[in-house]
Length: 93
Image 1 (cartoon, rainbow, N blue to C red):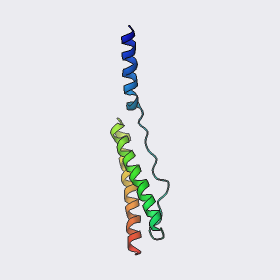
Image 2: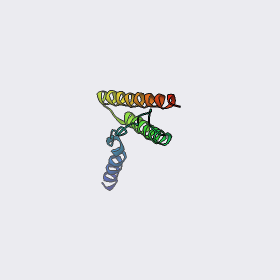
Image 3: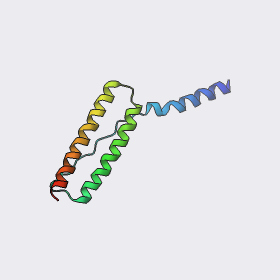
Image 4: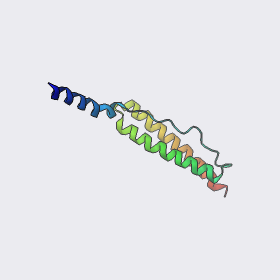
């Protein structure tokens, strides 16, 4: 009996990460590439990279196709916006 209860507790504890599927928040704001400093662009790059890693983890965890599609679309939107600002930043040099 005790082994059965312990086995159930162990199985429940092992399955907890499968239920902890939290969608990451996108970076709050992206700097304007035309007026941003190198430091601002590098800090934003780090934030976007962290967001991408977190979103990829979320996508591997999420079961709902609709949620995955919406999250993937948001990730592409953020990446495209950041890349546009990088191009603007590079063009001013």
